[in-house]
Image 1 (spheres, rainbow, N blue to C red):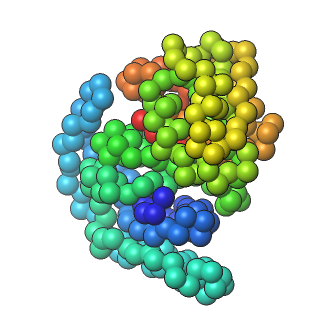
Image 2 (cartoon, one colour; image 1 turned 180 degrees about the vertical axis):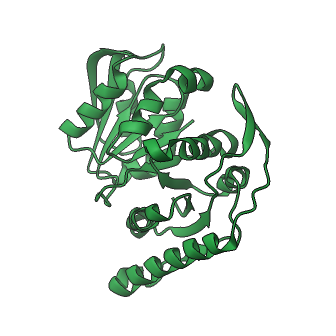
Amino acid sequence: MKNILLPFEYAETIPHLIDCAVSLAKVYKSSISGVAIHQRIDSFIAQEGSIIFDTVHHDESISEVIKYKEKFESHMEGLVLKDKALSSLNYQWLSEELQSQKYLGDLSRVYNVVIISRPYQELQSASLSSIQTILFDGGRPVMLIPMNKQVEIGNEVLISWNCTTESSRAVFAALPILKKANNVTILTVEKAITDGPSGEEVSKLLLSHGIESKAVSLEGDEKKAGEIILEYSKSINADLIVKGAYTQSRLREIIFGGVTRHLMLHSDLPIYLVN
C-alpha cells in the first residue's frame, strides 16, 4: 500500500481522512496524494460492468480548490511538526482545478488504494457515484472512512466472505493489511452465499501466507446479511471490514439495495471494498 489517493468532495472531511491516511502511511511507508473532486455527478449511462461517461462542464470557482489545497497542506504540515516519525512522509496536492469523477476513475488506476468518506444521507449521491467510479472505472480498492474518531485501522479485521469472485479479489488485495493485523475473522452468513470455497478454506489460504485467522458462520439471509455483518463486527471490536463490492448485479443493488450498499450507508467502521 505504497500509494494512497485522497479525493475530497467535502471540505469538512479533509482532516479526518488525512488522519486515517497518515496512520496507514506510517505502517506501510506510503505516499499520500490529495485532489479536489466536484460534488456534482458527471452524467453517465450505467451498464452492467461498465460506466460510460458524458462529462458535463461545470464552471467551478478556483477559490474552492485553493481552500481544499490550503486545508490539506496545513493539516499535513501540522501532523508532520507534531510527529518526528512523519519527517520523511511524502505528500502532494495533484491539481489546481476542481476535477471530475471521470478524472478520479482514470487517476485511481495508478494508486494502491483510494481513501474516501463513507456516504451519508445528505452527501449520498455524489459519494456513491465516486465510489462506483473508482471500483468499476478505476478498478482499484476503496477504503471507506466514517466520520468518527477512529484513526487506527487494520488491527482487528473482519472479512465478509460470500464465496464470490469479488470476495476472493478483496482477500488477495487486502493481504498486506491482513499480514499486519492482530486478529483476522472470516464471517459467512449462511444463506447469503453462492457456490464456492468455504470460510474454512479461506482460513487455510491465509495460513499459507503466514496469517492466522478464524472462520465463523452465522445464520441469516441476503436481506439481513448487512445488519448481521455490522453487529458481529462490533461484537469482536473490529476496526476494518474487508468485502467484495457489488457481488450481485450493480444495477440490482443500486435499485433494490444489497449488502454492499447497506454497509456503505450504515457502517461505523472503515470498509475495504474491492470489485
